[in-house]
Image (cartoon, rainbow, N blue to C red; front, side, top):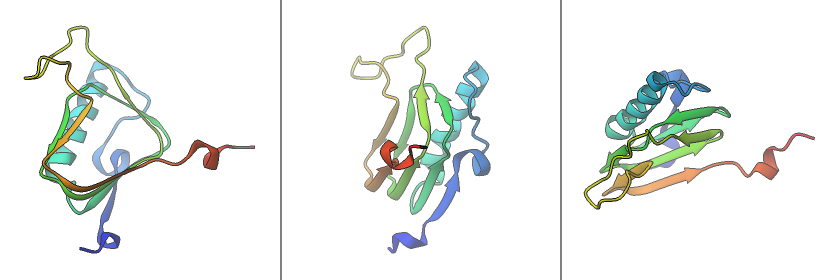
Amino acid sequence: YDSSDRTVYDFEADFGGIAYNYSTAALQHNTQTLSDILRYNASYNSLFFADKIFHFHPGVYGTEITDFELVINGTLRFHRPNETYVNHYNRPEPCILIEDSTDLLVTSPDPADTAVD
């Protein structure tokens, strides 16, 4: 598979991700949206986060993803609810968990390369 054939999706523009809003509704929306992307649209694609702050609850989950690139130019900020949920290991839910997957690449620009003079 040639990685240059990946479709690049924008979290905000293509999937309705909500930036700069950490209301309960926005947290739930962003969390569910990212989970759905990892479940249904990740393999052989790229997901781009613009230089903005996106807020989530922990518990984003993906499995059996192949050849996926996650490009984070902004900030993904996770907020634990007042009641912390635990997983089957009796630990707090991870922010993002991706299992049984191959060829995953997570990139983010070096802040020194993006500094404004």
